[in-house]
Length: 483
Image (cartoon, rainbow, N blue to C red; front, side):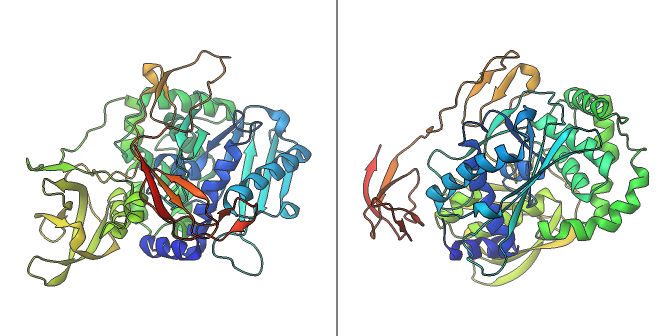
């Protein structure tokens, strides 16, 4: 388990409260524990807003719950869930030191209005903050009352913390097109601000290129399964008043800065036009790229862990770009003078000299500017929205493309593409040890246990010592590098 200081450092970087960041940390490891359990790995399919944050977009709204669709209703049994989660939390404690007291786990199985089984679970945890009093909780929404139209896929779980396992964390989740259709159905059925936020963000992202025909087909089947009409932009008009009223109270705590409601609501006509017509999205041109520069799309957590100067501001800048918000940038120019510039952020680049550059437009006059990352002294998101003049290439996506489902392939989440399986075929087990490059072996200075790291990161955190006791961790000593 990482220490309290790392949680507080990430809290500062993201302008969020410490309890939100701690929960995000625990969610990543709880997903690892669930998908390490042989009885859950093949039957639990991850979905919802937390799935978007953890499996698709490294930079996204923070969500609080875990939502799953089960491919077998037989596991919706309270006794089974309590028993299997005792094993899940034991694995979690052994691997990380995160404690989920078994006597505080709750699983309530009930029949919904369609008379099918659902379950609401609650688990309480002791995380790195080590707070006293009542423990924070994670809610699990588990159902078998959903239709899975597309085959589930495996995706890497974003876990931008120093104790990320060398082989990463993998979850079995909804395909991108299925998430998009599910969120659109949910927006029409329950009228919640987070669904509008998710639908617009899924539509805006240029990384995944979903086929409109596929999304519409999935949406129609989901609406038919639920017995509701397929939503249109007109049918959603009456929901605007309720969405405006709840926009602040239901979203603000999940975001560093709350974007204006109008900047999201105004996108819906374009989304439904794309969905119904199937026409290709009109993409903006990329900003001109000098010959001695190339686009740079880093994993933010990695840069932060490696101590790259200015990396703590990238998350703020990327989030602003994804949400079309201007940034007040405090910047030290070449002559040493510092000042604040309000900018529209567009992309990160790396120069031939090795400098990381932020390309932006000055908000006041639209003039293009490049800012060296190591000279940025501060970055504060504003609630001033902007209409992009170039393609925003500050991708918030987790690295790794998703091939179109129309091409008959699925993405395994570990850098491999496999043919889509025929119905009934059992999925091959992924290799969870997929790594490239050198391996750095660190030795704990307290208990002498050795650790293999894919990156030069000496932080070890709490771990199980060779004698079986829990070592509080230390800064490891690099003893060997293997190539």
